[in-house]
Length: 550
Image 1 (cartoon, rainbow, N blue to C red):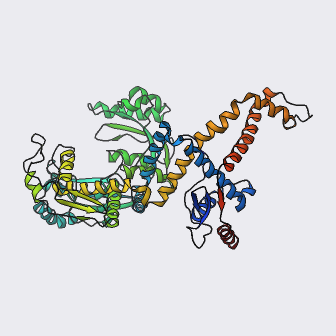
Image 2 (image 1 turned 135 degrees about the vertical axis):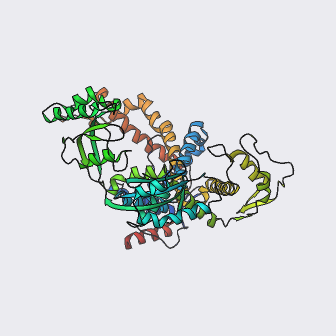
């Protein structure tokens, strides 16, 4: 987007206020500017102004009147009808709107929670009974896990693994150490809510039902960068060879050279064995992770270790502690948006809209339940002829949604990612949420004051950029006769230290800049002459008084 010099309309806490913010401070023809608008603009720009004379209310008022004169001139010349202007404004509008379509309070809360969890790492075991996401009859599974809790608390994992684990429907596993974002959010939350040596109540994730036992909680180990030489477990000679390589490194051989020559990890061997930085719980190998974090000094090399992948020798390149919240904030936010946590933020925002618009809805979905029986990807549902098209389902403000509206939504949105029809209640909830969001987006300009003023700021600023480019800057720059005349009449402005005059070609840029300012001043005077400007002195006096008192 273009760089545009704007009067800013964003609202921090005001430095001062007046009794009636709707008082009209000034008018240009029939266009009125209230005290509220002027105060917000003045207050926002106060810290940006370097010219002290512009901080004077009277001077600033004249600048703002000039700004409004330019905006009106742009509309008179129909710059707002240019296709390029409309296209860029629409792009900006969509981008700006996205900042107002979520619950910031909920997002900030999840950010702080994520950072606090990142500071701690949990070691946990769990028992999982797999079920389909669509399964509704789950009481038996819940009760089975309830019956396992006492055994889980009082017995070793290996005993339970032999008794219950089948690797298909029931899984009994140690998960190692993990922190935020390493597990699905609902599992992570239950683990962080469970005390050490305690077992949670059964809970559900998209994988099935779980109970989790927390074995230990420790402070974050931070982040480590290591390299490794890996030999696959092809035969008994692998162990002999890895020990031989270790002895060579101890005796002075270069780790990276040996990694390039002998490592079976072809993704890293060309890099001398170096891996990307990782945190605890990020790798699918507990022995490897343990060996990596046990290295203390940069350059230190581990003794050979064995994992399910083969034999390894590790070398430490760097080790850092957990970064501050400020340093991690942007990366945490990105993870939240790409994580199931994002649904928490969305649901919070939808709930606010439900309350805001006092939504009324009919929960009797018997017609749709009956009609959708047997529908699947091979037998897609078609809206029946006997549907009561106009029967009311949802209403809020001036919006009324009927059976046909929901039916059309089902046709377009019923299948999930596995091409299975979603439950009717889920579809109905999504239908209401989407309808609320669309209504809110379409009415954002009238409903959200912050959005309205920021949008106006860009809308008018974009107009002024085009206006000033065409009516002032280019005209002044392209009038070579006027530029030469200005130079000849003001040669003293372009003198050397010894008072000799610099040739025009040497100072043409400075000449153009100076002449553009002069041209703009004359142009603004012409705009003032063709408009009627009225300033309410009483309102201006009240503003000055409030500033002085502050």
